[in-house]
Image (cartoon, rainbow, N blue to C red; front, side):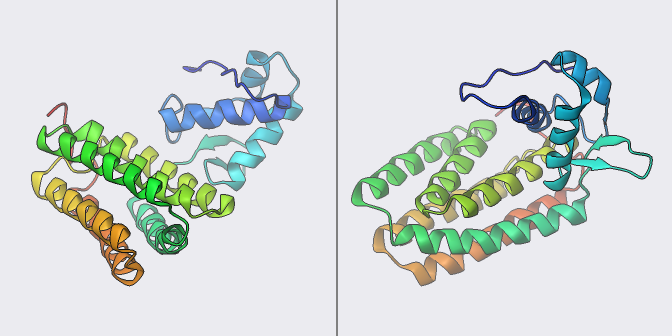
Length: 232
């Protein structure tokens, strides 16, 4: 295996520790899509029996991060472009719900924080810093989702976005590598900020619906292996 067990601050059962370590390895790309996971090998890494490893496998399979086939082989999920399209539809639908909930809960201080985060996004945009732009973009969405005040909603959105990012990493796809996509995204974020400041939930919902549709459209047109960039 190319990854090592991870230590976590919060006390956890051995099954939970294995689950978190495997999930982090999947999200970080240390375990590749389609790669086979060996139960005995992982058990040896954690100096344990197969039982907690199997429990972690079942949890990750239920979340669609792993696949257990008819031969009982455990493989890292290999997401297709069509499946990513479905994931974007889920994000779009749930993000509309999240912004609706968040807008009624955000304080003036929260809005000011969003204003500062959008300003930082603008600096990455102006510098053509695609990698940091993507990270800041996701941080903004993440912050709004947290303001929705629903752990279940937040966890679902974060999990779906994690699967989309695994697909990006596998195919070497970096969103916003093309300048028109970068411009469209930043324009959307300026509008998101404006509608949040105005507490205009209707226009914000409409923008979010179009925003995610545009993101998938750019990805679909680029296709696997395209949209790559190695720098600014």
